[in-house]
Amino acid sequence: MSLFPADIEGLARQIIADFAADGLMVSTAESCTGGLIAGALTEISGSSAVVDRGFVTYTNEAKMDMLGVGAETLTGFGAVSRQTALQMAHGALFRSRADFAVAVTGIAGPGGGSAEKPVGLVHLAAKARHGRSLHQEMHYGEIGRTDIRLATVRTALEMLIALRQAGLV
Image (tube, rainbow, N blue to C red; front, side):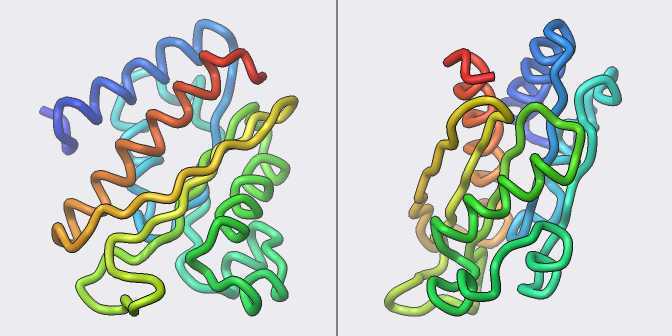
């Protein structure tokens, strides 16, 4: 029995099968999900052929130290921003052996939100080593911390699949 809902397990299985068949590797950079994306992928047998590494960068210092996110980005745009998510994805990709990276940063709640950045706001970015980056700004709403985190995992896995299927390797 999986630790994750069936739809997330299915997405993870698809990524492991498809990426392994093409010899592709993935890295993750996670803030609000705290490693759940890497956890969903590594829940699948055979994931060692696909998952290179995961970065859990919950603090701004970790984002800077481990992923190279710029202090000016964090100061100017905040940790929960398009710019930070894109820099996190770039750092996860180029500080690993991966062909693809996905990054997430958001406000899972129940506290920490504001009028400008409410609970349920998550920025996701996916990047291919020899391709372009994708970004999604999600507004999951105040559906609860666990559901926001699981919704973020779902979206992140969908973005990896979409990026690979678009041939943006």
